[in-house]
Image (cartoon, rainbow, N blue to C red; front, side, top):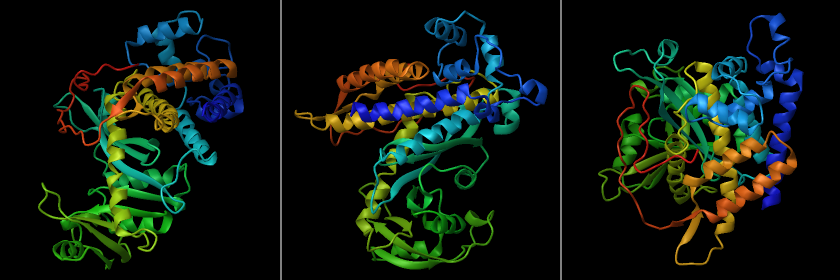
Amino acid sequence: MKKEISNIFNAFRAHIVDICQDAAKRAPYLVCDDERKRATLFTRTRVWTFANVVHAVMCCFKRTLSVEVAQFLETENLPQTTPEAYIERRALISDELFKDLNLWLNQHLYETGTVQQWKCGKYLCGIDGTRLSLPYTEELYKKYRQRDDKGYNLARGLFVTDLVNRTIVMADMYPNKTEERKAALESLTSDTFPYPLLFTVFVMDRGYPSLYLMNWFAKNTGGFIIRARRDSNPQVAAFMDSDKSSETVTLKLSPNRRDIDYPDPDPLEVRLVKRPPLEDEEVPTVYITNLDAGQYPDEVIRNAYRMRWNSETEIGTAKNELQIEIFSGTREICIRQDFFAALILYNIESVIRLFCNKKLQSHTGKYKVQVNMNSTWFFTCLLIMAMFRSERILDRELTFSVKMFLRMHSLIRPGRSYPRKKKKIKSSGKYITLTNYKRGL
């Protein structure tokens, strides 16, 4: 197990070091309009070199910036500088660097066969959105939230998660007024997806039914499973009221508003799969899919949608435990740097947790156990620190981290559930965390 993890992270380390040391490879990530000045950026020997700035951003500072900078420089045996110097230098590095590093890590996991497939050689990913609280500044107000009477800004966060491997394979931030479906389509069409799209099935909730969107998924991906609303299409409403458990229909453009902003899509043949209503439900649940009934029976479709809750869980973990809404700057470039760097930290922790949970399956006792995520972020940060040092140090820290992951486990109690707490919107930049929770960073 340790050798597999070591190979993954040593390759990731080599990729980061290669970008930081090669002037030609880091050039696309430099932010400067003056071409003459751009050619000399990060060429002089300073405390905040390109590698040190990237390193500091990836550490995901969550406390007071002056304290974090001072501690980082002391740990790295560097001369102390002011936080303003760090802020000035980080603004010269594009947030696309950290976005591409997360893409490279996910692609490497796919190419090495680390990520598990779902069914019939396909991967299962969930698409979901969430609102992200941003600092209240004029720059962010103009782009993300046209509202100045509440003292806060909101962004639309779009997350694509691997429902089997519990990693975040793609994410981005959009203005809050951006519709979820448009954000999803823009991400999938404009950015590189780490898995082959034709071998990936996407699962979505009730906010995504759209004939135009379903046509795009049918032509460009391995398939889709979308929960349908009664008002999404008259054929769906008729099927919901029928006694059938499944039916193949040809959906046509509905006159409702859900497709009004898209070009007129072609009719699409799909399967409608029904799940009977639960005790607290009045109507059955209907899923729309284009997957073949022979390879993917109705129960497989129902189980796949149940796994969509993993997407909600991953987003909740990122927001509440990793606390991705705590940023170390107020400018958009700083916020996006922190956002994508947090995804890297999240996926590194997820990879180690994936291997460790497999090993913990052999645990003998009354209850099964799993990795305790409340404690693992700190040890993942130690790995981030080691990735800019030698392979020997990285392997040493990796051995220590895996040992602590396996030691700090928690019990799995089947059937245990908690009521979902509704939290008010955060205002004045203050973060409202989970009750009795202290972050491990």
